[in-house]
Image (cartoon, rainbow, N blue to C red):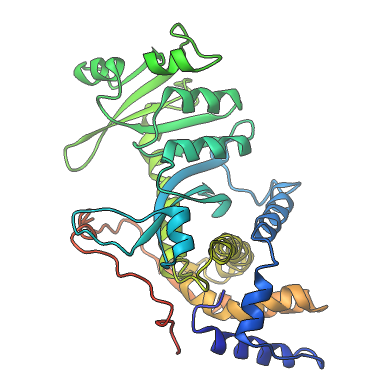
Length: 389
């Protein structure tokens, strides 16, 4: 994950390798750039699937769940890409009121395990592809009893239908005017109701399986907020005894974990600080960031057990500082893959991370300024502006 100029990053990399091996030959930036074109970005996707398969198999005592469900969240964002003709042709130029002509952005969609802090899948796509369309691509990874949390940009009959076909469940935050059924519910005095919803006319006419008579049962729930607003939730969790009304506000709040993930991957992993100007290099950097995020989560989870033991009788609970941990991990992660002493390298890293802790102060709230980024354009990324320190 080179974030400075390639000359400096390659020098640091090979200097580190020379401490671990006797035969190491430096390479030029030109040689590196040419050879990376022969490495498929899918290698990072495959490596990610290996560690996920390992984690979710025969590991029930460590996997965090909620009422028997693995809690997943789908969420979308945008990534600003470096400008080149190839990138412009692949992803397109953003168009806005400022008439900026040299900023390329891509749509990002992730499927994220919010309790275990793991990325199950990351997709980088053109902005022409909508968030709901990308969400359908994630559905294939759902397992029986998975519970998917989605924001109000995602509710659709077809997506709900597909999730149920996977024997999974959903919880949508929903617009009050999503359809006539939700409008009637919001106008009523009910706080909780089980209703039937159907597809729109266009979907029924175009879909091979769904007809205008297709129906699914959903549960509508009103959630009053401290601001006085009332949020509408729509879910497939119909059993009032297993899933009482009072549990849904906190359940939906757990979706916030995917927002924290985006903050970490953009502002700490610096995923938008790409190391190349080709589509190939960008996909390498993107999928590597997803992989490294998961490696970080697994190592921190292991070290967190030791933190809990050492601080069990203190005023606050403590967690490992995920920002600082990445700085310590960057080169040491290499030892986990190139050294025979991987276990000792892991133990050394965990010993360091246990000392990098911060208190968890519950109940703190911060005002959210939703429009703060809309008044300024993101600066274009230039290939001659890489960090040198």
